[in-house]
Each structure stands twice: as C-alpha cells, then as structure tokens.
Image (cartoon, rainbow, N blue to C red; front, top):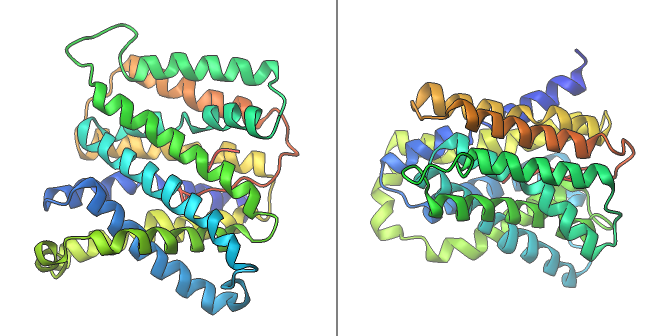
Length: 307
C-alpha cells in the first residue's frame, strides 16, 4: 500500500470518528448547534494556524468580493449540513445519520445537471436509483416499520446530504482562484464568525473549563476535521480524485462500526444493505470518469466529499 492510499484511508477513517466526539458532547448537555459552533471554531483556529505556518501566502483573499463564496460554503453548507447531521445523530443513530449524509453525491449530480449543464448519463441514473432504494432501506421505509419510523431524523439526515452537496457546488466557483485547503480554511473561519456571537457563553463556559469537555471539543475540531482534511488532501494530491473518493467510502463503515460497537446502536441487516447500496452508488458515479476534476472533501464532511 503506497503512502497516498494510506493518507486517504487515514483521513476518511478520522472523518468516521466524528460521531464519537458528538455523542460524548451531548452527554454534557450541549445542543446540536452548540456542537457545530465548537467544531467550526476549533477547526478554524487549527486550520488557520496550519496555513499561516506552512503557506502564509494562501491566507489572503484575491478579491474582497470573493467572500461571497465562503459565506456560501461556510453558512449555507457547513453550518447547515453540520447542524442537520448532528441533529440526525441525536434523533436516530450514527449509522443512520452517516448513511443519509452519503446521499450527497446524488444531490451533487442533480444540482450539477441544472446549474452546470453536466450530462446525466445512464450510469448516474442507475446510481441515483440505487441511492434512493438504499435510503429507503436505511430509514426503514422498505419494509415499512411505522414503529421505528422517525420523520425528523429522515428530514435532518437528507438535509445534511443536501448541505454537504452544496459545498462541492459552491466550491467549484472558488477553485478557479483558491486551493482546496484555502477554501476549507476560509469556510470554517466564516462559519465560526457567524456562530460565535450566538454561543451561550454564560451558561456553557463552566463546562468548557472541564478537562473532558475540552478534550472532546478540541478533539472534534482536530481529529475528524483538521487532521483528517490535511492528510486526505496530501494523499489526494498524489493520486486520482476518483480513486480517492472511492477509498474514502471507508468513512461510513468506520462511523457505523463506532455507533454499533461503542454506543450499542441498532442497525439491522436491511439497513446495512441500504448503506452498502448507497456506498456502491457513490463508487459507481466515481468510476464513470476517472479524469474528473479534483474532489473537495470536507466533514466539516471538511469536509464536500462528493464530486
């Protein structure tokens, strides 16, 4: 196994650990939006410092008007998708929320068709159909189980997929002027600036002084965000984007394993089949054209993974 593959697998696996940090922060009474604030703030600080040390020339806007791109990726994508994903985790489970997040490539394909006039091939159509059926299995609409049906988790889970997809769509405009690492850094900085004023410091500050809470809060921004994105990008620069995207499908496997093994969350065989179908659809779309443009990964997400 070469270094590029190792870095990609490591980055994607770290993305898969995000649920562990989130679940532990929920134990201390943090709300989904508060956890989003903790994530984007710590990530912004870490990524900004990393960029200042390694490539200070990249911490600069080519034009002040370009801030519109990062308002789009920071507020309409990162904040929205993280809030939806974290809420889906609180309402259902890590495996279900992660599977629904991975519907993002389907939304990217649909949005790209309308916005960029990208061709809608037979393979993409099959992938979208497989994604739909897989999603129905995951949320237990096939077979219909009314007792286990959670409409809120479904809506927030699909919302996270749409928000995740928006990162790839909006970033396409910014890639003409900025590197993927610069885009991610500016994205988190804008998201942090937008959220910090609304964080309930008076209520939560005593909690943030707790060593365990500090570990989970800082770790959330460090491991499944900053480090994950940096090592993934390093690997991506040395291999094909389509291959990297396929390798990154290890993320939902890691996430589901954490939910099932550590948190004892239920995820039956049909739901597992659904997740497999969704991952298969992602691979199907990525293998269509191995000369695709560079995929931007964020779980911020880091982070939009879909291309």
